[in-house]
Amino acid sequence: MLFPKYRARRMRASTNIRRMVRENRLSTDMLVYPMFVTFGKNKKEEISSMPGNFRFSVDLIGDVVKEVESLGIPAVILFGIPKTKDENGSEAYNPNGVVQQAVSEIKSKCPDMVVITDVCIDEYTTHGHCGVVSDGKVLNDPTLELLESMALTHANVGTDIVAPSDMMDGRVDAIRRALDENGHIDVSIMSYSAKYASSFYGPFREACSSSPQFGDRSSYQMDPANSLEAIREVNLDIAENADILMVKPALPYLDIVSMVKSKSNLPIAAYSVSGEYSMIEAAGKAGWLDRERAHMEALLSIHRAGANIIITYFAKEAAKIINN
Picture 1 (cartoon, one colour):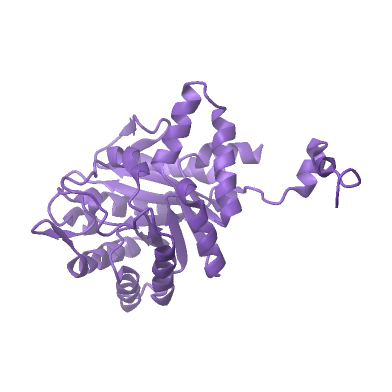
Picture 2 (cartoon, rainbow, N blue to C red):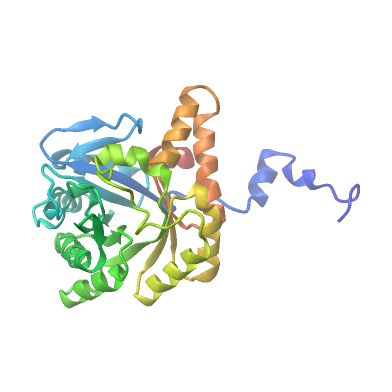
């Protein structure tokens, strides 16, 4: 296998040869499209820091999901923006909340669409943290009860997969028990197993108005310096009967995606977060790179690292490119 008898470029010589020997391929089957649902009627509000992404009111979201379905994308994940917020995020577990209504609307129009719902109260609290707050501290165990209630209200209206993103200890086990005890044995849990305290979440927090009003989330989200801790978190979620493991963010943590893939035979999801999307959008707008190629290269790298489920704000455009 030495030059000049072996020439690696022979396998790159033409488009069709490259197609034949390609090791990884993107498919619409692996895409999940994140959507923001808000209160009111006939609302379609573009998110300024995430061009091409919108907040939709419940009455519009079903038709948007029809478009997503027509592109061959099998799943959406929903995030709610309530009309009112309070200390304990009560709208998160309101049976008639915006996400609960949106699930019903989507299932009535697209019954085969896999609906995933974010289970975390940060978007619904006045303080912007992912748990119950007392004396400036985020309390773990009291938060579990709220997450159980939130997951149950989602399951009751037809959610297929609940996705706890709060990073409280023990939340997968608590939610699994609550679902099973209430007859929802077929509702899956996609756990945000390794969710880092990342600077790449900024545009999302603008979309949901969910920035912490004091401190940060470093006491419950993971330290970006740590990798072995991710495996400990993953092992805990496996023991608590998670169905899908997620790494978030994706691009700055491809090594973590690869590690998790090597340690588990469960499906691996990676969330290509808002900051990843927006920095490519900004660079593309400035003419510094080819926007579409950069997005697709990023998604391919996430899949190559080991993710077989990719949550991405570029999902609709990626599906069109793949389908062509």
